[in-house]
Each structure stands twice: as structure tokens, then as C-alpha cells.
Amino acid sequence: MTQPSPSPRNKQAHVISDLTLTAHRLGPGTKLPTAQDLAKKYEITLTTLDRALAKLETQGVIHRRQGSGIYVSQYLNQKRVGLVFGQNLFQFGSSAFCLLLLQHCEKRARDQNERFTFFLLQPGEDQTSAETIVNQDLSESLKQGKLDGLLLCDLKDPAHRKWIREQEIQTVALFNFQGSPAVIMDMKTMIDLAAGALAKKGCKTIGLLGILRSHTPVVRQAATKYSLKLVDSWIGCPDDENDPPFDRHEDMGIELMSHLLEENEGLPDGLIVTDDVLARGACLALKKAGLVIGKDLQIATHANRGSLALEYWQDSLIRVEFDPAEVVDKMFAMLEVLMSGKTLKKKRTTVIPTLHEPATP
Image 1 (cartoon, rainbow, N blue to C red):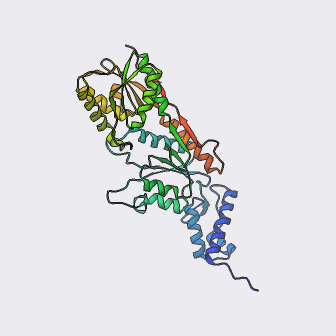
Image 2: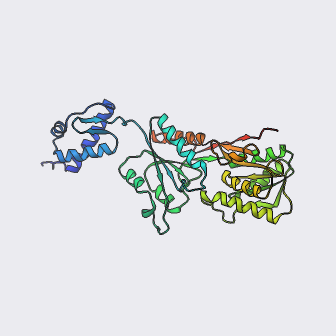
Image 3: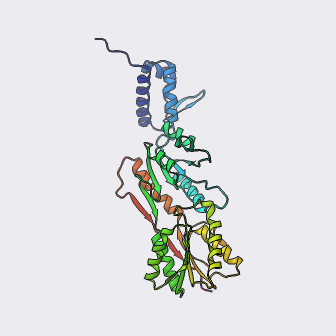
């Protein structure tokens, strides 16, 4: 019985597979045979060949130069990484951590000869389904096989999270993300270092200004460890347990601190703040009230290395710093293992902050 001849689609798939193997064997920059010679070799039409070459070009396997020929792409062996952010980090008042993270990702990709793309997932007010809120460039890049892995940051929208989980691509997340390996910033150690530094300064009573109410028992435990008393009337946290948008943190710091000052007759000896932009808002409220940080109130706060959020008060604040560069290095290291087809030994890795105390006058 005569075997049916392969369909154009099957012929195209064969060409893509064979030329991919050829490209890897020859290496970046090598010139390939002409289109006419390739069409003759594979016994296909120039139209079918053109479709195959277009697919290979999209995948970064080849590069066509008009008037010169077909070449193995210089990016052939590069891993293609995307950073996906779930909030608009360019809004006024947003945390500098986001921008620092992006800058360090770009640098890390350059240093490791990897291609890097940034995607922002920001739903509009009238958008209700995942199909309308995903970044279209990201969606197309995944469909066309232009990405080998994704770094995920601050994906709080349930539709975003569901859509990402449905994609067949390796991912590493900052903070917990169901089904994905993750890098965790150790807030328990941050709070412990802050409490210890306040005790060292001679504080006996402390308050808390936090983004999440879940930090309260952690602060209470640290206070007990260092013989400090956490004053209940000096606990300022939003009622909503969900982390508010980045661009609201400073306003929230002003509001929470102003409220605490109005509701309390006196000050505690010290204050732990779990977010740097929240701390900036608190410092502005204290300045408006005529209070001096380091004299009237000791503050130990979360901070990010390289951020200017607390620059004005850096000589007065106890800062417990996370390094965005370390966060990026750990995320990339985990993703590179996954993109190479290997299995991670640990699906969670932790970033430990460092303590920076103001110089003694």
C-alpha cells in the first residue's frame, strides 16, 4: 500500500526540528544554506519553508538578513527570562524595592548572557476575566515559545494567579505562590533584629506599625524574648489583612501614626515598622507633630538596600535591610536550575536581612 505523502504542516514541523538541531551543532553566527537550497533539500515549497523559518526566527534559532542570507542566531543558547509584576510599580509613592528589583534583574540577565523582558499585569476597572487582564505581550510570548522561564512578583489578583498556573513554563516567585518554587524574605528575622536593637537602645516599651496584622504575634514574641512590653494601644495595622497597593503605603503610614498620636497620651520608647514606605509616612507624621526620631522615639524599620525612601532620616533610624540584589540572585539561580531541566533540592529559599544602626553621636 502506498504511504500518503506528509502534509505541509508535518513537513514544516520536520524542517523546524532538523534546522534546530543543525543550528545547535553549527553554533551562533554560522551561515546556513540559501532558501532555495533548503527547499530543495527538504522537498518543500518556498512558502512552507518560509513559514518554518519564521517560526525558527520567532524562537530565536535563526536570523534572516535581507540581501545576505540565513544565519544561526547569536542568541541561540541564551535563556529567555521574563519578570512578571502584578502591580503598577511606576505609580507615585510606590516602593523603591520594585524598581530596584527590576534594575537588578536587568543587570543579572546581562551578566549571565540571558535575554530579559519585563511584563506588568495591571487590570483595568472594568476588566473581569483573565483573558482581558493578562499582558498581551506576555500572552503572545508564551504562545510563540519566546520565554524559557518567569520570575513572579506580587501577583495578588486571583485571575492573574490562575492564568499563570495554567501556562506550561517554569516559574519562581517572590513570596509564596501556589505550585511555584519561591524566594521568601525573612520578616521574622527582620522583626527579631529590630526588637533586639531597640532593647539595646534601652527601650522598655514598644509599639508596632505594620502592613499586615499577622505580624503582631511575631512582634509580641520578639518583645517577650528581649524583655520588652508591646503596648496594645500602640499597635497600628490596617483592618484589611490583604497587603494594600504599594502606592498607598506612605499615606497609610501618615494616617496610622497620626491616629496613634491622637489616641495615646504618651509615646512608647520604641517602634517597629515592617515596611520602609510605611515608615516614611510615619516619619512625616512625627515631624509634623514636632517629635524627633532617636530622641523622642526610637524607630527600628524594614528597609531596602539602595533605596532612598528613608534617606532624610537614615542617621536617626535603626534599619533592618533586605538586599534586592540578593533576592534577584536567588530567584535567577533557582529558575536557571529549572530551565536546565533539573530538579531543585529545595523549593523555598530565604533572604536574611542585615542590621544597620545609626552612629552614636
